[in-house]
Image 1 (tube, rainbow, N blue to C red):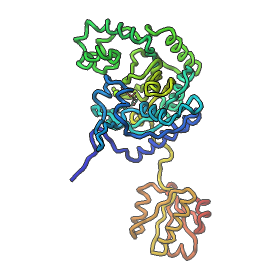
Image 2: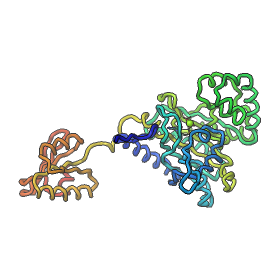
Image 3: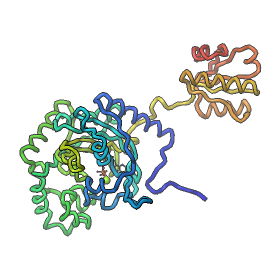
Length: 414
Ligand code: ATP
Ligand code: MG
Protein backbone atom coordinates (compact mmCIF):
# COMPACT_ATOMS: atom_id res chain seq x y z
CA UNK A 1 0.00 0.00 0.00
CA UNK A 2 1.20 3.49 -0.84
CA UNK A 3 0.51 6.36 1.53
CA UNK A 4 0.53 10.03 0.68
CA UNK A 5 0.40 13.18 2.79
CA UNK A 6 -3.01 14.85 3.05
CA UNK A 7 -3.99 17.44 0.44
CA UNK A 8 -2.58 20.85 1.31
CA UNK A 9 -0.23 19.37 3.92
CA UNK A 10 3.44 19.23 3.04
CA UNK A 11 6.67 17.58 4.10
CA UNK A 12 9.49 20.05 4.36
CA UNK A 13 12.70 18.42 3.17
CA UNK A 14 16.39 19.32 3.27
CA UNK A 15 18.00 21.44 1.95
CA UNK A 16 14.87 23.66 2.31
CA UNK A 17 14.85 22.92 6.04
CA UNK A 18 18.12 24.87 6.25
CA UNK A 19 16.30 27.98 5.04
CA UNK A 20 13.58 27.36 7.65
CA UNK A 21 16.20 27.06 10.40
CA UNK A 22 17.93 30.18 9.13
CA UNK A 23 14.67 32.11 9.21
CA UNK A 24 13.94 31.00 12.74
CA UNK A 25 17.43 31.88 13.95
CA UNK A 26 17.22 35.36 12.42
CA UNK A 27 13.72 35.93 13.82
CA UNK A 28 14.75 34.89 17.32
CA UNK A 29 17.82 37.09 17.18
CA UNK A 30 15.89 40.15 15.99
CA UNK A 31 13.08 39.60 18.53
CA UNK A 32 15.60 39.18 21.37
CA UNK A 33 16.94 42.68 20.78
CA UNK A 34 13.43 44.03 21.41
CA UNK A 35 12.93 41.94 24.54
CA UNK A 36 10.52 39.31 23.20
CA UNK A 37 10.43 35.96 24.99
CA UNK A 38 9.39 32.66 23.47
CA UNK A 39 6.10 31.05 24.45
CA UNK A 40 5.18 27.54 23.26
CA UNK A 41 1.47 26.95 22.87
CA UNK A 42 -0.60 23.84 22.14
CA UNK A 43 -1.80 23.29 18.59
CA UNK A 44 -5.12 21.96 19.86
CA UNK A 45 -7.53 24.16 21.79
CA UNK A 46 -11.18 24.28 22.88
CA UNK A 47 -13.22 25.30 19.82
CA UNK A 48 -14.96 28.14 21.64
CA UNK A 49 -11.88 30.30 21.96
CA UNK A 50 -11.75 30.71 18.17
CA UNK A 51 -15.48 31.28 17.72
CA UNK A 52 -15.45 33.92 20.45
CA UNK A 53 -12.38 35.77 19.18
CA UNK A 54 -12.03 35.39 15.40
CA UNK A 55 -15.77 35.87 14.98
CA UNK A 56 -18.66 33.63 14.02
CA UNK A 57 -19.13 35.20 10.59
CA UNK A 58 -15.54 35.07 9.41
CA UNK A 59 -14.34 32.62 6.73
CA UNK A 60 -12.06 30.93 9.22
CA UNK A 61 -14.79 30.05 11.68
CA UNK A 62 -17.52 29.48 9.10
CA UNK A 63 -15.68 27.07 6.86
CA UNK A 64 -11.98 26.63 7.52
CA UNK A 65 -11.59 25.11 10.97
CA UNK A 66 -10.43 21.57 11.68
CA UNK A 67 -12.96 20.93 14.40
CA UNK A 68 -13.85 17.56 15.86
CA UNK A 69 -15.05 15.89 19.03
CA UNK A 70 -12.42 14.19 21.16
CA UNK A 71 -13.15 10.90 22.89
CA UNK A 72 -14.50 12.80 25.88
CA UNK A 73 -17.11 14.51 23.71
CA UNK A 74 -15.46 17.96 23.84
CA UNK A 75 -15.32 20.07 20.73
CA UNK A 76 -11.67 20.74 19.94
CA UNK A 77 -10.00 22.60 17.08
CA UNK A 78 -6.57 22.55 15.47
CA UNK A 79 -5.57 26.19 15.85
CA UNK A 80 -6.19 28.26 12.69
CA UNK A 81 -4.18 31.14 14.17
CA UNK A 82 -2.21 31.92 17.31
CA UNK A 83 -3.55 35.08 18.90
CA UNK A 84 -6.61 33.52 20.53
CA UNK A 85 -4.59 30.64 22.08
CA UNK A 86 -1.98 33.17 23.16
CA UNK A 87 -4.54 35.37 24.90
CA UNK A 88 -6.04 32.27 26.56
CA UNK A 89 -2.58 31.35 27.93
CA UNK A 90 -1.81 34.96 28.88
CA UNK A 91 -4.85 35.05 31.13
CA UNK A 92 -4.60 31.45 32.37
CA UNK A 93 -1.07 32.04 33.69
CA UNK A 94 -1.66 35.62 34.88
CA UNK A 95 1.10 36.84 32.61
CA UNK A 96 -0.36 40.35 32.93
CA UNK A 97 1.31 40.45 36.36
CA UNK A 98 4.70 40.53 34.65
CA UNK A 99 6.17 44.01 34.07
CA UNK A 100 4.35 45.79 31.22
CA UNK A 101 4.54 45.64 28.32
CA UNK A 102 4.71 41.88 28.00
CA UNK A 103 6.30 40.74 24.74
CA UNK A 104 6.14 37.20 23.41
CA UNK A 105 6.82 35.29 20.21
CA UNK A 106 5.92 31.82 18.99
CA UNK A 107 6.65 29.70 15.94
CA UNK A 108 4.55 26.79 14.77
CA UNK A 109 1.93 25.26 12.51
CA UNK A 110 -1.59 26.57 11.90
CA UNK A 111 -4.45 24.68 10.22
CA UNK A 112 -7.12 25.95 7.89
CA UNK A 113 -9.33 23.91 5.60
CA UNK A 114 -8.85 26.12 2.55
CA UNK A 115 -8.56 25.27 -1.12
CA UNK A 116 -4.89 24.30 -1.54
CA UNK A 117 -3.02 26.35 -4.15
CA UNK A 118 0.28 28.17 -4.53
CA UNK A 119 0.91 30.01 -1.25
CA UNK A 120 -2.07 28.42 0.45
CA UNK A 121 -1.76 25.22 2.46
CA UNK A 122 -4.02 23.52 4.94
CA UNK A 123 -1.14 23.18 7.38
CA UNK A 124 1.11 26.23 7.24
CA UNK A 125 3.60 27.78 9.63
CA UNK A 126 3.75 31.17 11.24
CA UNK A 127 6.32 33.16 13.15
CA UNK A 128 4.28 35.48 15.34
CA UNK A 129 4.70 38.11 18.05
CA UNK A 130 2.32 39.71 20.55
CA UNK A 131 2.82 42.75 22.80
CA UNK A 132 0.35 43.38 25.58
CA UNK A 133 -0.20 45.91 28.30
CA UNK A 134 0.36 49.18 26.50
CA UNK A 135 -1.59 51.51 24.25
CA UNK A 136 1.52 53.49 23.43
CA UNK A 137 1.45 54.23 19.75
CA UNK A 138 5.24 53.96 19.62
CA UNK A 139 4.75 50.21 20.07
CA UNK A 140 2.60 50.04 16.91
CA UNK A 141 5.42 51.68 14.98
CA UNK A 142 8.08 49.60 16.69
CA UNK A 143 6.30 46.31 15.90
CA UNK A 144 6.07 47.26 12.21
CA UNK A 145 9.69 48.41 12.25
CA UNK A 146 10.81 45.11 13.82
CA UNK A 147 8.94 43.22 11.10
CA UNK A 148 10.64 45.24 8.38
CA UNK A 149 14.06 44.69 10.00
CA UNK A 150 13.36 40.95 10.14
CA UNK A 151 12.70 40.91 6.38
CA UNK A 152 15.84 42.91 5.72
CA UNK A 153 17.98 40.58 7.84
CA UNK A 154 16.79 37.47 6.03
CA UNK A 155 17.55 39.15 2.72
CA UNK A 156 14.00 39.84 1.49
CA UNK A 157 14.06 43.33 0.02
CA UNK A 158 11.07 43.55 -2.29
CA UNK A 159 8.30 44.13 0.20
CA UNK A 160 5.56 46.69 0.62
CA UNK A 161 4.13 47.61 3.97
CA UNK A 162 0.46 48.58 3.95
CA UNK A 163 -1.14 50.22 6.95
CA UNK A 164 -4.55 51.45 7.96
CA UNK A 165 -6.75 52.01 10.97
CA UNK A 166 -10.07 50.22 11.16
CA UNK A 167 -11.30 52.38 14.04
CA UNK A 168 -12.84 51.24 17.28
CA UNK A 169 -16.20 50.17 18.67
CA UNK A 170 -17.26 53.81 18.67
CA UNK A 171 -16.54 54.82 15.07
CA UNK A 172 -16.77 51.57 13.15
CA UNK A 173 -20.59 51.21 13.39
CA UNK A 174 -21.00 54.53 11.58
CA UNK A 175 -18.63 53.40 8.86
CA UNK A 176 -20.53 50.14 8.50
CA UNK A 177 -23.72 52.08 7.80
CA UNK A 178 -21.98 54.22 5.16
CA UNK A 179 -20.46 51.14 3.52
CA UNK A 180 -23.80 49.35 3.45
CA UNK A 181 -25.45 52.37 1.87
CA UNK A 182 -22.81 52.39 -0.83
CA UNK A 183 -23.16 48.67 -1.52
CA UNK A 184 -26.94 48.50 -1.27
CA UNK A 185 -27.79 49.11 -4.93
CA UNK A 186 -25.21 46.79 -6.43
CA UNK A 187 -25.57 43.89 -4.07
CA UNK A 188 -26.81 41.61 -6.84
CA UNK A 189 -23.38 41.79 -8.55
CA UNK A 190 -21.61 40.40 -5.48
CA UNK A 191 -20.83 36.74 -4.81
CA UNK A 192 -23.10 34.71 -2.53
CA UNK A 193 -20.64 34.99 0.35
CA UNK A 194 -20.63 38.78 0.10
CA UNK A 195 -24.45 38.88 -0.10
CA UNK A 196 -24.49 37.07 3.22
CA UNK A 197 -21.73 39.24 4.67
CA UNK A 198 -23.75 42.36 3.84
CA UNK A 199 -26.09 41.83 6.78
CA UNK A 200 -23.85 40.08 9.27
CA UNK A 201 -20.40 41.58 8.70
CA UNK A 202 -20.24 44.07 5.78
CA UNK A 203 -16.59 45.00 6.36
CA UNK A 204 -15.60 41.53 5.25
CA UNK A 205 -16.82 42.39 1.74
CA UNK A 206 -13.73 44.60 1.41
CA UNK A 207 -11.56 41.52 1.93
CA UNK A 208 -13.27 39.35 -0.72
CA UNK A 209 -10.89 38.06 -3.36
CA UNK A 210 -13.51 37.45 -6.11
CA UNK A 211 -12.75 39.66 -9.13
CA UNK A 212 -16.34 40.87 -9.69
CA UNK A 213 -16.59 41.84 -6.01
CA UNK A 214 -13.27 43.71 -6.17
CA UNK A 215 -14.56 45.69 -9.17
CA UNK A 216 -17.99 46.29 -7.69
CA UNK A 217 -16.66 47.76 -4.45
CA UNK A 218 -14.50 50.27 -6.33
CA UNK A 219 -15.07 53.77 -4.94
CA UNK A 220 -16.52 52.62 -1.62
CA UNK A 221 -16.15 55.02 1.31
CA UNK A 222 -12.85 54.81 3.15
CA UNK A 223 -12.78 53.73 6.78
CA UNK A 224 -10.18 56.41 7.50
CA UNK A 225 -12.69 59.20 6.82
CA UNK A 226 -14.94 57.79 9.52
CA UNK A 227 -12.41 57.47 12.34
CA UNK A 228 -13.42 59.15 15.61
CA UNK A 229 -11.17 61.83 17.06
CA UNK A 230 -9.14 59.45 19.23
CA UNK A 231 -8.66 56.90 16.46
CA UNK A 232 -7.65 59.64 14.04
CA UNK A 233 -5.01 60.94 16.46
CA UNK A 234 -3.83 57.39 17.05
CA UNK A 235 -3.49 56.68 13.32
CA UNK A 236 -1.70 59.96 12.63
CA UNK A 237 0.72 59.20 15.45
CA UNK A 238 1.44 55.71 14.08
CA UNK A 239 2.30 57.28 10.76
CA UNK A 240 4.39 59.99 12.45
CA UNK A 241 6.52 57.38 14.22
CA UNK A 242 6.79 55.21 11.10
CA UNK A 243 8.16 58.23 9.27
CA UNK A 244 10.48 58.99 12.18
CA UNK A 245 11.87 55.46 11.92
CA UNK A 246 12.16 55.75 8.16
CA UNK A 247 9.69 52.94 7.45
CA UNK A 248 8.25 53.32 3.99
CA UNK A 249 4.57 52.40 3.93
CA UNK A 250 1.39 52.95 2.00
CA UNK A 251 -2.13 53.42 3.28
CA UNK A 252 -4.59 50.79 2.19
CA UNK A 253 -8.01 51.50 3.73
CA UNK A 254 -9.33 48.15 2.49
CA UNK A 255 -7.13 46.25 4.89
CA UNK A 256 -9.97 45.03 7.05
CA UNK A 257 -8.34 41.68 7.83
CA UNK A 258 -10.04 38.33 8.15
CA UNK A 259 -10.47 38.34 11.89
CA UNK A 260 -12.97 40.27 13.97
CA UNK A 261 -10.85 41.18 16.95
CA UNK A 262 -8.77 43.93 15.38
CA UNK A 263 -9.15 47.58 16.38
CA UNK A 264 -7.33 50.63 15.08
CA UNK A 265 -3.93 49.80 13.52
CA UNK A 266 -3.90 46.94 11.02
CA UNK A 267 -1.12 46.21 8.56
CA UNK A 268 0.03 43.76 5.97
CA UNK A 269 3.35 43.10 4.28
CA UNK A 270 3.08 42.14 0.63
CA UNK A 271 5.58 40.98 -1.93
CA UNK A 272 5.16 41.98 -5.58
CA UNK A 273 7.20 38.87 -6.48
CA UNK A 274 4.44 36.50 -5.37
CA UNK A 275 1.24 35.72 -7.26
CA UNK A 276 -2.30 35.96 -5.93
CA UNK A 277 -1.30 34.96 -2.38
CA UNK A 278 1.06 37.87 -1.90
CA UNK A 279 0.67 38.66 1.82
CA UNK A 280 3.76 37.45 3.65
CA UNK A 281 2.82 38.88 7.04
CA UNK A 282 -0.15 40.53 8.65
CA UNK A 283 -1.13 41.94 11.99
CA UNK A 284 -2.83 44.58 14.00
CA UNK A 285 -3.98 45.90 17.32
CA UNK A 286 -6.63 44.14 19.36
CA UNK A 287 -8.25 46.44 21.87
CA UNK A 288 -10.67 44.34 23.82
CA UNK A 289 -9.83 40.70 23.18
CA UNK A 290 -8.09 40.16 26.53
CA UNK A 291 -11.01 41.64 28.43
CA UNK A 292 -13.51 39.61 26.41
CA UNK A 293 -11.60 36.49 27.42
CA UNK A 294 -12.01 37.42 31.10
CA UNK A 295 -8.67 39.17 31.56
CA UNK A 296 -7.84 42.75 32.55
CA UNK A 297 -8.65 45.63 30.15
CA UNK A 298 -5.32 45.68 28.36
CA UNK A 299 -4.86 46.00 24.66
CA UNK A 300 -2.39 44.12 22.48
CA UNK A 301 -0.78 44.24 19.10
CA UNK A 302 0.92 41.53 17.06
CA UNK A 303 1.73 40.09 13.69
CA UNK A 304 2.20 36.73 12.03
CA UNK A 305 4.62 35.93 9.21
CA UNK A 306 3.59 33.12 6.83
CA UNK A 307 6.81 31.09 6.57
CA UNK A 308 5.95 29.19 3.34
CA UNK A 309 5.31 32.43 1.48
CA UNK A 310 8.66 33.91 2.55
CA UNK A 311 10.77 30.85 1.63
CA UNK A 312 10.65 31.42 -2.16
CA UNK A 313 11.79 35.01 -1.62
CA UNK A 314 15.02 33.93 0.06
CA UNK A 315 17.71 33.44 -2.55
CA UNK A 316 20.32 30.71 -2.11
CA UNK A 317 21.03 28.50 0.84
CA UNK A 318 22.45 29.90 4.06
CA UNK A 319 26.12 29.13 4.65
CA UNK A 320 25.31 26.53 7.30
CA UNK A 321 24.36 24.26 4.40
CA UNK A 322 27.25 22.28 2.92
CA UNK A 323 29.03 18.94 3.18
CA UNK A 324 30.81 17.29 6.11
CA UNK A 325 34.11 18.77 7.25
CA UNK A 326 35.77 15.36 7.22
CA UNK A 327 34.94 11.97 5.74
CA UNK A 328 36.87 9.09 7.29
CA UNK A 329 37.36 6.12 4.97
CA UNK A 330 38.60 3.01 6.75
CA UNK A 331 39.94 -0.38 5.66
CA UNK A 332 39.90 -3.35 8.00
CA UNK A 333 38.40 -3.94 11.44
CA UNK A 334 41.05 -2.12 13.47
CA UNK A 335 40.94 0.92 11.18
CA UNK A 336 37.14 0.95 11.42
CA UNK A 337 37.28 1.02 15.22
CA UNK A 338 39.98 3.70 15.34
CA UNK A 339 38.05 5.79 12.83
CA UNK A 340 34.88 5.45 14.86
CA UNK A 341 36.71 6.71 17.95
CA UNK A 342 38.43 9.51 16.04
CA UNK A 343 35.11 10.60 14.51
CA UNK A 344 33.54 10.90 17.96
CA UNK A 345 36.47 13.00 19.19
CA UNK A 346 36.37 15.30 16.15
CA UNK A 347 32.60 15.73 16.54
CA UNK A 348 33.24 16.66 20.15
CA UNK A 349 35.27 19.56 18.78
CA UNK A 350 32.28 20.69 16.71
CA UNK A 351 33.19 19.22 13.32
CA UNK A 352 30.73 17.41 11.06
CA UNK A 353 32.31 14.01 10.51
CA UNK A 354 31.06 11.08 8.43
CA UNK A 355 32.46 7.55 8.13
CA UNK A 356 32.21 4.59 5.83
CA UNK A 357 29.70 1.94 6.93
CA UNK A 358 28.69 -1.58 5.93
CA UNK A 359 32.29 -2.72 5.29
CA UNK A 360 32.09 -0.99 1.93
CA UNK A 361 35.08 -0.85 -0.40
CA UNK A 362 37.40 2.14 -0.46
CA UNK A 363 36.00 3.06 -3.84
CA UNK A 364 32.41 3.15 -2.65
CA UNK A 365 33.40 5.08 0.50
CA UNK A 366 35.13 7.65 -1.69
CA UNK A 367 32.08 7.84 -3.93
CA UNK A 368 29.84 8.54 -0.97
CA UNK A 369 32.25 11.20 0.35
CA UNK A 370 32.06 12.86 -3.04
CA UNK A 371 28.27 12.65 -3.33
CA UNK A 372 27.64 14.23 0.05
CA UNK A 373 30.16 16.97 -0.67
CA UNK A 374 32.82 16.15 1.96
CA UNK A 375 35.35 18.96 2.27
CA UNK A 376 38.22 16.70 3.39
CA UNK A 377 38.80 12.96 3.13
CA UNK A 378 41.10 10.90 5.36
CA UNK A 379 41.87 7.27 4.52
CA UNK A 380 42.69 5.10 7.53
CA UNK A 381 44.36 1.77 6.67
CA UNK A 382 46.99 -0.54 8.09
CA UNK A 383 49.83 1.73 7.03
CA UNK A 384 48.34 4.80 8.68
CA UNK A 385 47.78 2.92 11.92
CA UNK A 386 51.34 1.63 11.94
CA UNK A 387 52.90 5.06 11.30
CA UNK A 388 50.25 6.91 13.34
CA UNK A 389 50.07 9.45 10.53
CA UNK A 390 47.28 10.28 8.09
CA UNK A 391 46.94 12.03 4.75
CA UNK A 392 44.21 14.67 4.58
CA UNK A 393 42.90 15.26 1.10
CA UNK A 394 41.20 18.58 0.42
CA UNK A 395 38.42 17.69 -2.00
CA UNK A 396 38.19 21.15 -3.49
CA UNK A 397 41.78 21.80 -4.59
CA UNK A 398 42.80 18.09 -4.36
CA UNK A 399 45.81 19.04 -2.19
CA UNK A 400 47.14 16.40 0.17
CA UNK A 401 48.74 17.16 3.53
CA UNK A 402 50.14 14.80 6.12
CA UNK A 403 49.33 15.05 9.81
CA UNK A 404 49.69 13.03 12.99
CA UNK A 405 46.83 10.60 13.80
CA UNK A 406 45.53 12.95 16.45
CA UNK A 407 42.48 15.19 16.85
CA UNK A 408 44.42 18.39 17.50
CA UNK A 409 46.85 17.82 14.62
CA UNK A 410 44.01 17.08 12.19
CA UNK A 411 42.00 20.14 13.21
CA UNK A 412 45.11 22.30 12.83
CA UNK A 413 45.75 20.95 9.35
CA UNK A 414 42.29 21.22 7.72
P1 ATP B 1 -4.77 35.67 3.15
O1 ATP B 1 -5.64 36.81 2.85
O2 ATP B 1 -3.51 35.66 2.36
O3 ATP B 1 -5.49 34.37 3.19
P2 ATP B 1 -5.15 35.93 5.98
O4 ATP B 1 -5.69 37.28 6.15
O5 ATP B 1 -6.08 34.79 6.01
O6 ATP B 1 -4.26 35.89 4.63
P3 ATP B 1 -3.74 35.87 8.51
O7 ATP B 1 -4.76 35.08 9.22
O8 ATP B 1 -3.58 37.28 8.84
O9 ATP B 1 -3.92 35.66 6.93
O10 ATP B 1 -2.31 35.14 8.64
C1 ATP B 1 -1.08 35.83 8.55
C2 ATP B 1 -0.21 35.29 7.44
O11 ATP B 1 -0.21 33.86 7.45
C3 ATP B 1 -0.66 35.64 6.04
O12 ATP B 1 -0.23 36.92 5.68
C4 ATP B 1 0.01 34.56 5.22
O13 ATP B 1 1.37 34.89 4.97
C5 ATP B 1 -0.05 33.37 6.12
N1 ATP B 1 -1.16 32.49 5.76
C6 ATP B 1 -2.47 32.59 6.07
N2 ATP B 1 -3.20 31.57 5.58
C7 ATP B 1 -2.30 30.76 4.95
C8 ATP B 1 -2.42 29.51 4.24
N3 ATP B 1 -3.58 28.88 4.12
N4 ATP B 1 -1.29 28.98 3.71
C9 ATP B 1 -0.09 29.60 3.83
N5 ATP B 1 0.07 30.76 4.49
C10 ATP B 1 -1.01 31.34 5.04
MG1 MG C 1 -7.07 33.70 4.55
